[in-house]
Length: 396
Image 1 (cartoon, rainbow, N blue to C red):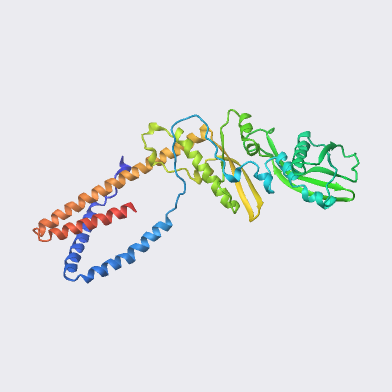
Image 2 (image 1 turned 60 degrees about the vertical axis):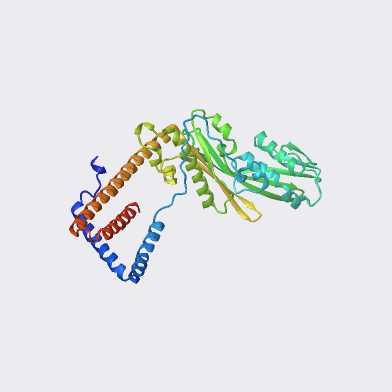
């Protein structure tokens, strides 16, 4: 309770003397301006010169938050994911990407963009067929590549064969190699068995003594490739995906949009967790910002991807957000503490303003009695002006 006591009551003697001096000066100025109106214009211009730069500095110095707090009623239903144009299915098939979230998506992209290497080794004529060398790859990878070739060359058949098979002059052979493979621990799960891989898939097109190649980078991100399947394999966990909402011209812009989307989603879920027993209105809690997300460890993984569009590179980013009850409770406790501090701050400001109004009223009554009501209206105007200035300064 002591922490809520405004400083105005501690500095009461000094404020009383200051109020006498300020109100006296205002009264003199009112009397002087009544006889010489041009002085008013000089005073107003002087105040503008002093006040306008001050407010401009305050507005520039004050940090601006672009996040809006949204607090929903308690519900256990998962949040619905909103799909924007940059995340529509098939965009990876339309443009070449800098990296793909799985081996299958990288292989599919290579099959869809195989036209140029085929023309380099075989010319403009259509080959009679494609021979896909299986090598040591999984059957699913070769078949995915074959399905992509069918979409690119719908009138040409393809077959899977070992590398010992000879390629006929009217055929094109295709070999797939996975190189530069690295293994990383998966950040969304603990344990040595849970790992993800990254690397480069290289497609080599062969015809006669000519060959041409095409490459695609990949990193295994199952939560990007198939989020529903990813959740089904982890029924005891709670994850959400935060995505950039527009086509971005830089990686930093995509990151900012994804983090902002994460802030909005966490704020939505925080409304279900924020303790109501604290007696603190939710409106006193600050909105969820990027510092809450980053420092709270909500972001487990991220996927950054760029496309070679017609007007240059376009970027998008997705974040895997840990929305577990424990992390939400920790953030809710922090927000409750912040809410209590803000409530005490507003209470202190209220008592400060009330105390100043009482003080100005006492000073006005004393000066009005001392001057026997001769300066009544001047004192009233001076008191109102002084009160407004003090209140504005306190609010700023």
